[in-house]
Every structure is written in structure tokens, then in C-alpha cells.
Length: 78
Image (cartoon, rainbow, N blue to C red; front, side, top):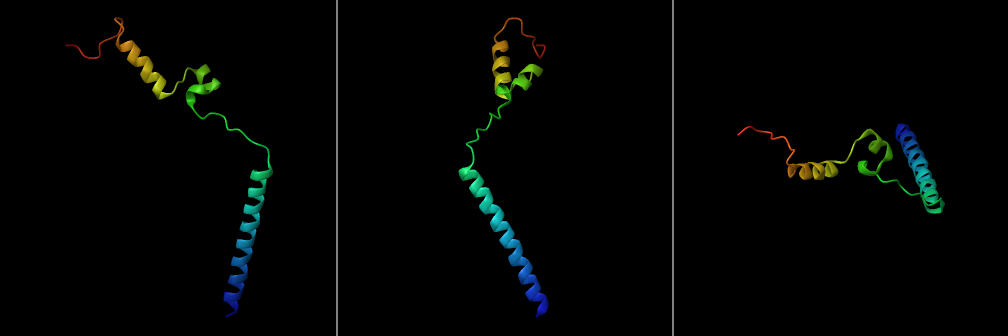
């Protein structure tokens, strides 16, 4: 019976620590500064643009424009 009492105390201690940490997290979010998240889109990142990396949708749009170009290389010989 004594082992169950120890396990119960440890479990309650863990739950108490988790509850306190969640309380501090909520207080920090509610009372903290208003944070803004930067855009996560690759096309809007300056570092990615410097490297010449674009998002898939932009690359697809560029390829579709090139498809109408007379300078386009044919992929298959007919």
C-alpha cells in the first residue's frame, strides 16, 4: 500500500508542476507583448530571394509563361 501512496504523491506533484507551467504560459501569452509572426512563405523571404529560390506556385507561373514563348525548348522530339 505504501508504494501506491508514493506513486500518487509523485503523480500529483507532476500534475501540479504542469498546471503551474501552463498557468505561467497563459499569463505570458495574455499579458505579454503582441507578437507578430513573419510570413512563412518562401517567396516573401528576402534571404530566399537573394539565393534565387522561389515558391512552387511562382515557379509554375514562370514556366507557364515560358511555355507560350517561341524560344521554348521542346521536351520531346516529334
